[in-house]
Length: 183
Image (cartoon, rainbow, N blue to C red):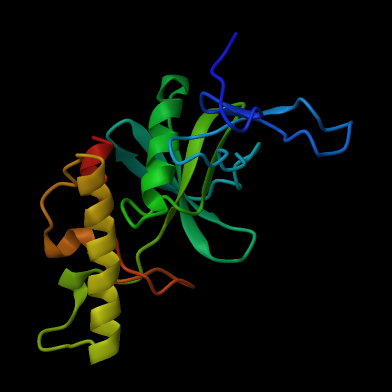
């Protein structure tokens, strides 16, 4: 009972390990997303929460430090918001929201780690400019983020200068903050 394909080990978004793998692994299933990738490994514990940064919509925010030493924001959600956390992480990988530092669930509920923007467009000084190649790279990053939103028929919100991050500590790529999604 199932769909027959030319590859019998792949059926309906659930992929079993191919028949040529060692016997101890054979038959294990991996649930994949729409791009046929397995879900990213979720963290089982959040980094230690630092100072409280306030509430944004349904999320409580805290300062935290990652294992790499970079600063991040720890966003905590209600247990019913796990699907939202997974979606925020997926869009964070393409430059929307900044939630590309990790996610998971622990005893307090689901959480997402958000990159802290080092500078936004509105924080640029009057007359301050980016050099040519850097500016082109930022435009490329934002174009990719907007293309990902368009592919998913999602409106990222109005693009005001305060909503466009020009990078974060340790990562030069620009991203859209998209805080309206949480509200």
